Length: 258
Ligand code: APR
Image: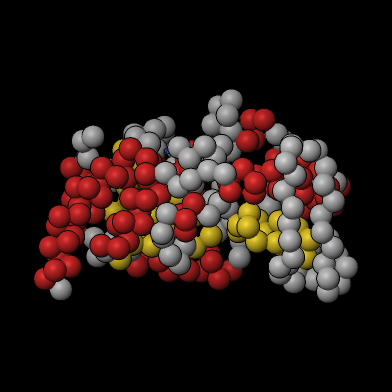
């Protein structure tokens, strides 16, 4: 796999790297993206019936069942070579991950301090008093349409998935951290996102304005391709290992000299 010269140069020069990821990062692990033709979740389901506060108020058991099935599905897949390459890179250099993904595949690949902009499938909280829910969450063995969400032991409210729904604000601390990281970065790698959903989709432009090199890794053109200095039309699990393999000798030498 040939690594674009400009991408390699930017990565070798960078002292601080931020990898901004979207659903395409987990696609090769078997986690469906949202908008890919035919396979994307929003091609198969109506986002307004599943990923909005209104949908939750209308039919919490339907929404809860769907997120349980996604939570269960992610538990049965593994990080791919792309996730592992990012973790390996972080062991050799200052590399941080900012993700829109609600799966834990970056962490399971060894990445630490991952900034989750859209929450996590593995965290739950009361929809009324916001208390984190630490009780058991049973994933049905078979796909079911409706499952009653658990009840909050503190206030009796319904427990909801810890993800950010359309129309909701991002967790402020995560957003502020993400902006600070990309503003301080020398290189921002944008992997597997269509760049449609804001404010996350605005991060590459924030990085570029702050002087960072922006490299996009995505088989298809996206809404952030114009912001990128380099576009690498490749998949995450193919491109990232090739990039880190190319970088490793120099980074190991650099670490040895430090
Ligand atoms: N490697 C790299 N990129 C890939 C791969 C792959 N193997 N497979 C698909 N892609 C790309 C697609 O070309 C597309 O540009 O990943 C992108 C996935 O885009 P979306 O499905 O729109 O996912 P994302 O950008 O993460 O969505 C943003 O929307 O639904 C909400 O909250 C949800 O976080 C999500 C947000």
